[in-house]
Length: 424
Image: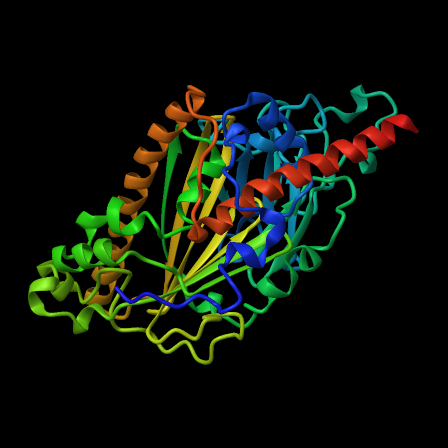
């Protein structure tokens, strides 16, 4: 695999001297106390992506999201004006969870004209207004206008739905995203609506899994069996270095070159790849998506492989040069467990072969994810022993340094702010 020269002025990590180059601690991934601080300092203050507008296509379409890190469940719904609202999933009468199916702790979705509580039949419209109370005359001085659903700050960017649990968000969503992310505006997300989703409960801290997908140093080794033997062997011997890293505010991106699998020798491809015309990072026939936004392929790689945009705290948009994208979410459930979600987005298939090509890509990425998850559970158990407490990172692992430093910065800012408020 080709190696790319680094900038003349120094390594990637040295571009960001605040990150340092010394060994790091992973205490933030094994400490219950730090996890509790993350919940308050990060997951109740940052903008969090919870889905896309295609999940609520019509008036009354809704879905719920269980968010253990923020200690709540929310409802996302499209109202009669076409706007998307977010509410805490709590009835104002006795606190029952308002929207749920057979399993009250699981996400659900559907379509309705109003929300009706299963417990006492209080009703709410799509804007969260309380519209009906069973035996209303039995209540004392009840003013229904004061007892609507509790709203959650909700904004949409390029079809991605974000929420913020702060009483008053410190930034608008667009300010929070910043230019590196908003330079992606214009990508045809709305044209890629063929969707494949999987999720896994992982026995590892959420940041450790994010770390796994922020560097490709591991790829030629851990995923060797997923690639043609000759290719993976050459990659392992040559090593891998991405040609571009960038950090802006709390967010990060790594951009890499790619390979044209269909140009490989026949013996380097798997038979199923020829049958489906797909494999090693997606369908071979890239769709015509038009001009790409300026934020993509910042290294101007040819061929271009991917750009992985890591949006703080727990959301990734990964663009593939072959004309599709995927998202990752890492939802903490404790200091050493989290829920991992992956969703792959392709254009609607026009033929059975195109459908099979997309399914092959989805199955391949599930295998990659399982390999990483298995490794990370081993990492979690090992670092929890505290037998080793300092770990060396290479230049390619710059984004790992940034994620853990940014996490610490948000906690310090929260502690400073709350201490100041307490002093007053």
